[in-house]
Image 1 (cartoon, rainbow, N blue to C red):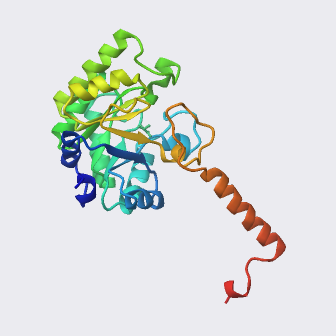
Image 2: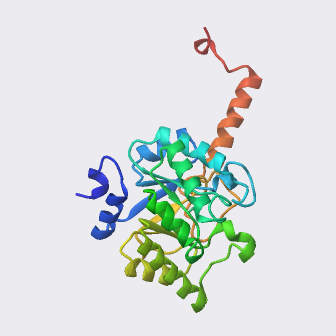
Image 3: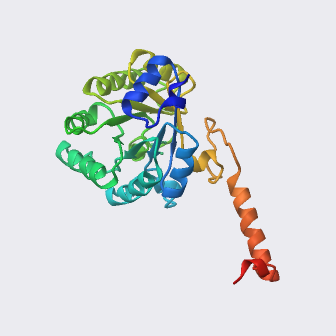
Length: 271
Ligand code: KIV
């Protein structure tokens, strides 16, 4: 019997057992109570309260405008809707890059005010001291390497990362460092599949990929992208499981037509 079908609550320990047994980990984003309930009840292993909320919830171009207060608001709403999945909250841009003391205070606020299970930070060696101090404070940390959207202005593009040997070797070194300081898992975004597979094979903690091929220990997607709510974003790695944009505009059009024609409400829909 699979771990996924037997476990009542997903913990970081469950995720490492899944890696050991070769059972893939499923992860999706959510930003609000209602969506988190649906995703949790469907049986997802990990829910990420991603700072991609900046794009899909707030309509920003980048993830940079997201504040700590906004992430805490989204995190709190998600946690209220979840009974089983492990909930990870993204630390937003500017809440941990300054210094490690500020990083710990931001992580403590997230854990205290949202009751989430863990935090996620983007970067490797550059933020290692912060990661170390957060873990020392008893807070589980998920790393994030490869394409790190909070550094978009440094790299200037959302193209595939670590195609050149130098960058690929740095990514492998960073992954080892994050494992050594105690991260329980790492997201690797938009890098060549062979590189992500190598990292998953070398490390004993789970590697969750997005645009990183099938040789890793699990997959994550942004819920608005995979449900087809967000139509503007179609990278090669994205599989759409629904066309909710069309379904929802269809439903709204039907409602408008019913209101205009006087068909809604009918006699059974009134007091
Ligand atoms: O913010 C987010 O949704 C993420 C995923 C893309 C991994 O970090």
